[in-house]
Image (tube, rainbow, N blue to C red; front, side, top):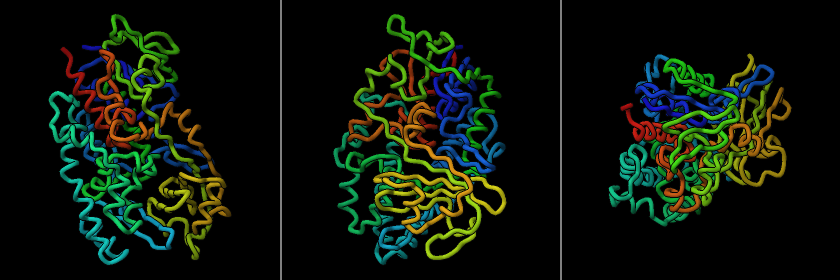
Length: 444
């Protein structure tokens, strides 16, 4: 039985720890904060509660597989439900698109209602990612990459120099389609001029599989994972920061922490590798993709949602995107007292005024209804979580090879999580954890 130390108690770290413990390894998980979950936790104040990080996920099969492979099925732990619509897009010309998920036909109708002819343009564009996703899924996200044996088409795809910005400009004359197609990456902090075409595959995943959430908040997934670690006998050390890796003969033998050394035969790094001096030389050419400005607000009373007074519990879907500069995103699924609402507002771009003032200028004015608010800057979030949940910033196609994961150049050290994968969000972090478990294998 190998002694495996997992650094980081976010979703990827917990997923890797649960998988490895299930097959018989002795696993110790180190988390610098005093609670598990990372960005997959709850912010609470004055009777209101909000998801600290993501509020939905793609590829529910990844989460279901994790729970099935580490113990009881997901359905016995959580009620994962599809979102309909996935989100609402509001454009600067006053037009609106409610984007359905999980259905090509529904998306065709939605875009066609935006303007005749746009529906076919959209579904034709999304279809170009079908074969690309199957290749990436089988040979990149579900199999440890080895250039010596990787399919040539995968190597060509990873090295393709065409940017997503260029592809969208060439494909769509209507700017609104470009905004919808690029949104998942823009909101994660990337410049589409630096994003390779294959990273745009998320629009295919949304259309094919939909987006999913847990009623009451996706942070419940983090709680369920923490319970799974206890079930699997993982030793969890919270309030324990990993300082560096201890190497002997070029191989890892322990993790140095604020509480002393923890011996290890294998180490899984599920945090930003820049936090560990032994790994810094291997990631100097990469840059983190920083979180947005975040404002959690607790609201009470009626509000103005754009020329009409509306009850707080009605009128807006789970997520509303207001395109422009700044880009604003409103997520409405927090928990609130009766007759109230708990929203999270994200801001990216030129935000030189209070985020709620910027929101009011875009037609949603809730300033008079604010009961309480919690503001977080990108720096606040990175310090709180020990890194960015959006992982590595895209800086062209070379970024695919420059991030670490699942293997690293240090024998015995593997990497999982946002910084170890080319996708953003929970499903890709979960896939990276599965890769780590595959590389480590079963004991003996």
